[in-house]
Image 1 (cartoon, rainbow, N blue to C red):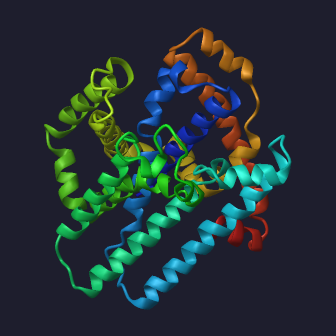
Image 2: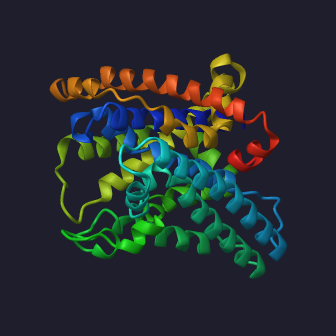
Length: 349
């Protein structure tokens, strides 16, 4: 599925674009309709793709398989993350190394290096589930559906702190363990990982549904309504009403996924598609490296603070800088990959 690599490359560009807006321009989400919109599906789509790719119908689960996969993913996810995390803290922040380290460890975001850690949690959880499922000879959709429902319940606690303060805290100190471990970020995104896994498990049925005449129009209509509710209307902006926000995230990522699938020939057979595929195959490299190349351009953020909510200018400015950052990351990645040792231990290959 070359178009899936292209989709992953597109999502990686969105990630860097978002970080350019927030870290380079110093923008705040409330200044920008573009940031609010892309945040609804940017990271959910990344985890959706990860969950989609995690399912292998031909895989035979055994203790050896579970052990080998788990150890491999721990090496691939942890070693590069720790190396670049420490290197970033030693080079980039203006505060001394130890205070920066303590502050980063206490945050669920880990100075930006939370993604690979959280993805590792998800993969290990999924591998354990798959092993147990195979040992019990379960051939039903119900256990996975129950796991998905539980993950949704945990997801909602992150957006309803008034009622579930154990995760993020409410008008007080956040839960230290949840932040040190970054488990709070897993709760925020695990439903999307499982959603991608479910779509791949039932791929034939999913494709029939996506190809039906009514499905995409209904998804689009609901996505527009829910997105407007989240960004513009705020009619249900109550402590207990996270439903439009949740639905908007699932619907928007589904629309992007269906778009890339529908135009798969374009993303597989054109130069533009090949570029996106290449970026998609280097997502780990770009994710680990791009923080080092984010420029400081606060004057751009100040412009958008004064001239708020210009979606076109906002997106174009962030995207232009993001593409330069991605290009630098690819160059550095290619240089580091000259060494087989660095290629294996820094980028997992």
